Image (cartoon, rainbow, N blue to C red; front, side, top):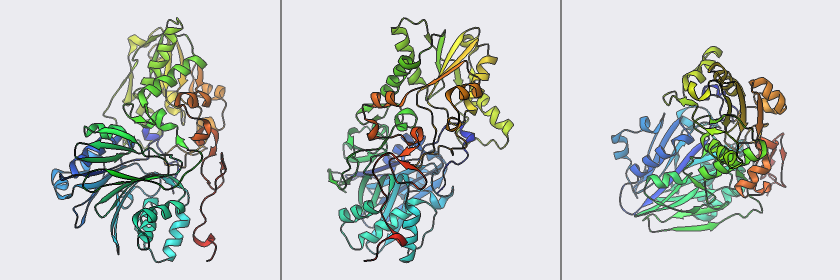
Length: 491
């Protein structure tokens, strides 16, 4: 598994894992609704896109590298027959950057056909792969999704659908939200800690499962609820409803707090909260904990916008003179895939992507609000940019706690060596990025705004303690990975 790929071309931000979707409709083709849903989830992955459908007789698949709009032609969609299907957008977190790891992963076996789309990251994929290879399974990719597909296919030879899924869930350890296609039946599964998001939506003629509710909105659907941690949801192939099976119950969840901070679309609803309002709430807390009265407060677009709005509102309620303004303009055509091989070009990336509005900045004290600092390079360049545009003071406020450790749950967050806060104090980070002051949001503030206790959140990247049993890392709860492969006890 690969953790911490170089994401310098993403202007220092962490990159999201993947987005998954599944639909079961009454009679119309599923291909276009899946395609529109993937467009709505494009922010969750830009490396590849794929759709698998089933027409009642056979499975159809189209998976391509690139953005959704480039991956499918009208002809491709017309060939994806059937009124049920699943889809996936991917940013690589485990496995190679190649078509072999693009999803959904499709496999045919003795009991039918299987398609699988996975958001998250397994911790024990290697042990499972070794065991399955010993049983004669041949693998075509290095990703962990194929491991889940093979394990489930093996269990389906001996069990009914629900029991087979449960058995696989008892063997895989880590973070996963899955949409699965078994022949023409679409299912959704969320790991017992609920680390990655998955929700259910109702359409006029069927049901949809998606990583985020924004995909349901795109289809003019209505959000029903989140899939519960450890729950299996089986959509009726005719679109008439769904069945729910609570397969595994855990005392505590491990929701990824970073979904609310950065990854999810602001217009998505997660855990009954609109992400935009959560971010505004976090911004308000940021003022309460670390407000600084400057002439202007401005966001790093786009992810800092809701934080800055809440921060400025709370400041004004406290009679601070701070004005909320847009001070950085974003060039939307410099995408995440912009390639910059040299350091000089990487430094130019910020200038290509963001341009200061001089009238907002010149001769004024400025507070700039961002969602996180990863390597610190971008923050350093932003501070420099604003000083060059005439800012008298540049203060930085961050809508998340310091990131001190990598993510093993499916976010490409960089290694400890690359994380600026892993071995530096806040004052040392401030000095490195050149700001007049720097402050982060506390973990308690995140917990308060999300209305979740710390024991129900995954805080691994900001505490260094994880909700899963990861080699060489500390856990924050009583947890152990399933014993499989060569370590398994003999019968």
